[in-house]
Image (cartoon, rainbow, N blue to C red; front, side, top):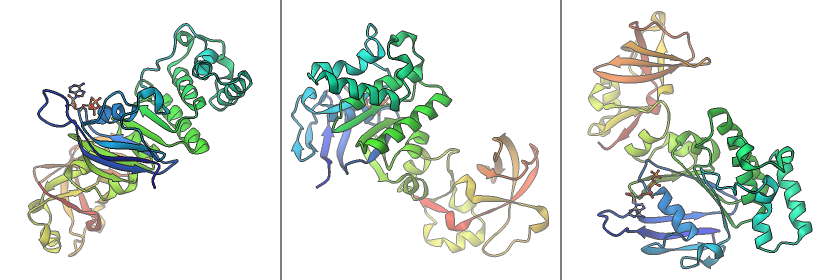
Length: 343
Ligand SMILES: Nc1ncnc2c1ncn2[C@@H]1O[C@H](COP(=O)(O)OP(=O)(O)OP(=O)(O)O)[C@@H](O)[C@H]1O
């Protein structure tokens, strides 16, 4: 039996037309790192609140480590939460913040000290043990809140956008730290985020939610390469996947994918290849198309071009020298990476 199991959870808030969650079912193995992504209002917080016990599901159940905890009070659930706001006690030092929960639970002094020593060493907090939260940087505060969660040794870690208050560099650092700690402790973690980049880079599996309904559950690679529907295809991946009318495709490709003719065609920017003039000969499987460069973003190792092509905008990734704005470029679609979605 799986470690965490959410069975057919639906949540209706009074006065609302639609359910905030609809038939949500998920099983998680011990030690898995699951990211939950979705736009604002998709039901991510509702899901966390049901897990922590701050909200009761309208229907369905939550099973954790073989126990049905659907009706248990939050304090009896043995879960640790790491928030976007660090929720540290302002009048307590770092050490006091980290050990406070253990004191309340009457953990022996020796064990408290050992855990404090270990976790602060692991998370690079030994220099700031006697410092108050207001004198810490954002990254340090988030590490303290992580340390506090870790010393609880909970059955489940729940993280609610823990990186979103940090600047880009710290986000990477704390993200790495979360991942390293997760691996070391084999902690089962549910991580809620707006950011599909965070989900892609951290999680074993991603759940894509929209309007309270699971759109897809899969590895980062699966949701990126084999999105189940248009929503997932458009939500995952930057730049956004190119999506256009089937009839825009070159005739040879329309012929090849004739059974998809009523759908939208889609392709990711890295599967469109810029061709040099001298290699422009078209052939049946690789028809050469023409586009006008309307935007160039240079990122060092690669560039993202925006092309005007048949009244459609196409994102194209290239590692070659970026062409000038307004230039006409030749390109081919890597047809084995074409995807098709219901409109
Ligand atoms: N306490 C509540 N009472 C009534 N409706 C609620 C309540 N909490 C959430 N909702 C509604 O449930 C739906 C899902 O909201 P939820 O906060 O779970 O989404 P979210 O994905 O966490 O959004 P965000 O990313 O903005 O935090 C929304 O339509 C929201 O308006």
